[in-house]
Length: 263
Image 1 (spheres, rainbow, N blue to C red):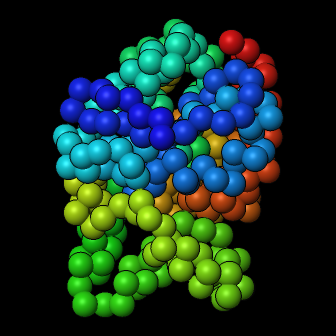
Image 2 (image 1 turned 90 degrees about the vertical axis):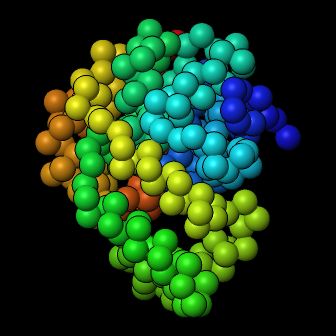
């Protein structure tokens, strides 16, 4: 099991594929498994490196200090450890904010940066949403209740056209052995609540923005208000979980842009 002992954490990561390195940073509540739909599509083109961010997955301890800056430092330390002086970078949601922070901290190391369903903004509504979901999760409600309340915010509404598939997704989430706890979820929420993204909107390295037209958590108008000056693509069929709703489109856009900016 690959791990990096780094400061106050033991960082879990996964590596698969062949080609130039592509570091993949998951969003809030998510770990390396978030990238499952993309790895088969990108693994033939990149060496895919997937991190369990602080408080998630198999990175321990779950209650280590957490912030955007610390997660940026963790990711750079891992690439140092693996010997990758330059690499491509893909971040989803909170992972996109971490990616923008890395682009600010070490632009010379990033051949290309891909910001998916993300923007350096804080929406109080989202903080309230996640806080309420934590409260539901800690309540006496059935354990699937909070997930069923979360999924409409994440996915294209078409997932509700197939109730059996939705039930299976809920069951898979509940059965996942490394699922983030409610306490860890609340702890990680501080990273989103406390960060200041005012200086992150203009990376000096090549960067593109991938926006889900149906994204409710980072709506297109909010994302493009701060990142619209960068090359961007609006994916019509995608919600916030852009790489689950439209994995082929996301993979194609990542490959195309990275190929224009080789290491």
